[in-house]
Structures are given as C-alpha cells and as structure tokens.
Amino acid sequence: MGQAIRMNTKLTGLMALAVAASLLAGCNEAETGRPLTYEKGVYKGKQDEGLSSDSRDQLRQRMSIQAGGGI
Image (cartoon, rainbow, N blue to C red):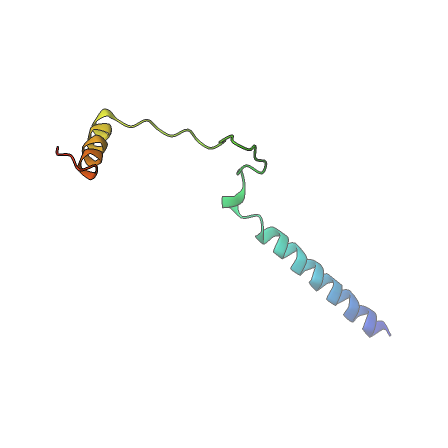
C-alpha cells in the first residue's frame, strides 16, 4: 500500500509539472504587450509614418501609368 501512495504522489507531481510547463510555454514573449481589449472602429496600433514628397511623386506617377495616362 505504501508503494501505491508513492506511485500516486509521483504521478500527481509529474502531472503538476506538465501543467506548469504548458502554462509557461503559453507565455510567449511575442504575445506580451499586445492589446487584449478592442473597441469597434478604433485603431490602437502605432501611427503610420508619413510619406516623403519623393515617395508621393513616385506613387502619383505609377497611378497615372496604371490609369492609362502617360508620365
């Protein structure tokens, strides 16, 4: 009977260790710090950087070409 109790104690300890390991594995560093609550229609991410005037000019040229116009 004493051996059965020791076996049960070891099994319980191993199960507790497995549960703890799985919980710690869920704490991925990439997952921390992300928003957990969301509001409909509200963007809470980082604000985009503005485009330089050179980038805007290049986009206008591409848009003109795709629309069928020339440069």
